[in-house]
Length: 140
Image (cartoon, rainbow, N blue to C red; front, side):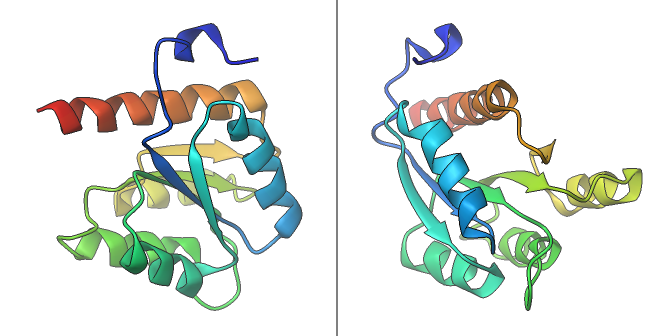
């Protein structure tokens, strides 16, 4: 069932990149968002995320922070430093929940921060809000 606040939107033209090194977390996110018709791609780590963005720029990235190799903070740093990717909406999904981690994420340029375990309604609300911003930017 699609939440009421999202029923007036057609999300089939929007794509999301979900990045997490734990496959179960990716499946959970896919299941939560599948009923809203998003095109969802996945990446299992930071380098895979950067490669996926280079291949096809997503409208939104759902990004874990704690990953081997290139972590989520570095992914954000690199995306924001590149004019081609600087405007991608990024929602951090992380078990890191210290005030320092949250502030660091926002200071690097994240648009929102959701702490794990993920609450479905919170994720859906944040995704819809970010997609409304993308939609408004497309119309401008």
